[in-house]
Length: 323
Length: 276
Ligand SMILES: Nc1ncnc2c1ncn2[C@@H]1O[C@H](COP(=O)(O)OP(=O)(O)OP(=O)(O)O)[C@@H](O)[C@H]1O
Ligand SMILES: [Mg+2]
Image (cartoon, rainbow over all chains, first blue to last red; front, side):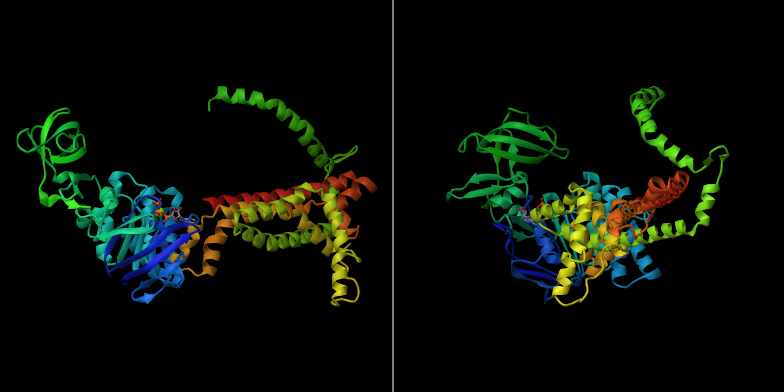
């Protein structure tokens, strides 16, 4: 088991900086999610930590040891690729046995370890299938089993749930979180799904164009983003003008709406979207910042306001975060 | 597919099928049938018996097999590393390499074979280089023996192995190799456990194709062997054009065909188990 430390890590591809002076410290057993749009350098960062790529600048430490120039084979990292990268010519069991064979573990011991790993990801009974005979979700779990079977110090997961439908994805998110807790393994997950990031991780790291935007606990990053990019990337952001001329962020859940006369500011309902427990209103403010859009998400109790209706809008000063 | 569709489809193919049967299959069947017939006697196995009794035929058959095997082996030993090296090239260099491999296809096989005489002859490039460097006193005899025939055949048939092999190799996702590395496998293990097995079906296909082509090769053994390296096709030439013994030639062809088909069947089996 190990902690990870990146110090000023950069990776350039010609003029493109896929990773640009990145600092990150992940504690032993911590679950950190890297979040960012497509092409922001998430996969690059993982491949640098895994040792599949060498950084153009900076150092990488695992368990306090400088591994910047150590080959992938020596890092004892379980890596799940964005594309799973299962060996097509091997069965499920052979895939999971592979890292054990490399470590000179064989026979009944290896077999029972592999079966345990498959059980952990709930894939019993499919040992003799080929990857091509599995569904996307099953392939993902084989990749996960193969990455944990040799008890790696670190688990790196590159959008492991990206190809799955919503329901399976939510199930596997729970499984993944439990698995990580059971194994106590230091984990970095890559995703561009902000809900996944917010729900799974101890901390999240937001990346854009290879640069770190913020590293913080999910709630902190959501409510107190370091900049506009983070604010907009982590969900719906309402920006309001502050008295001192700066801009403030108010999240939709913090906006309150009521009948006309209950608050000073008013708005017109442009769209009311019913989401089950919540209703999301797209509003156009009237006084002050006339026409400025605003989104409010309020619990659905009793009556919902209709499109075109005028409502009173308010928020607490404490719910504003300057960006 | 229902019966109606099948019959309409057949209607379109029928003329072609007739042409194929008349133009290709019927002559072959006639040729193969010759061995089983004797004028005035009807069905006979005499000609096959003749083959078994004359040791020269069996010797030529064995000789052919051996040369084909060596040429195929040489092909694999050169072709596999070559295809692997091409996979690692950058885009433009790769195109050039492919062009160089394919180029011989566009040059007449006669020209290519004769060019080996220029290279390997007693006053050829190789011998002159060897003598100049003092490695040998006398010119080394490359031509008009099995060595020359093997070198020539290996060269002519190389693209048949390299191209399918290269196609299979570039289909291998680099991430599979990276995955193997991240799972702790050293380069040697990555090659033997991941890379090589993924190229094996193409290697088997290419090898068998080259071997079958070697068995029936005519021009190169004829020219580079100078008549001193008897192989089956040259024997057939003699039997048909010089001492007309068509029945004997037919019997030999039948054996050659059966051997080729057996090898092909073995390959199909191999391929099917590999792709399961
Ligand atoms: N081998 C490479 N050669 C050149 N450029 C590369 C290479 N790998 C990545 N890049 C570039 O580096 C940047 C970051 O790529 P990366 O794959 O890390 O993005 P990502 O955040 O994982 O994106 P996605 O969410 O789409 O997977 C991109 O601009 C990409 O084009
Ligand atoms: Mg990626």
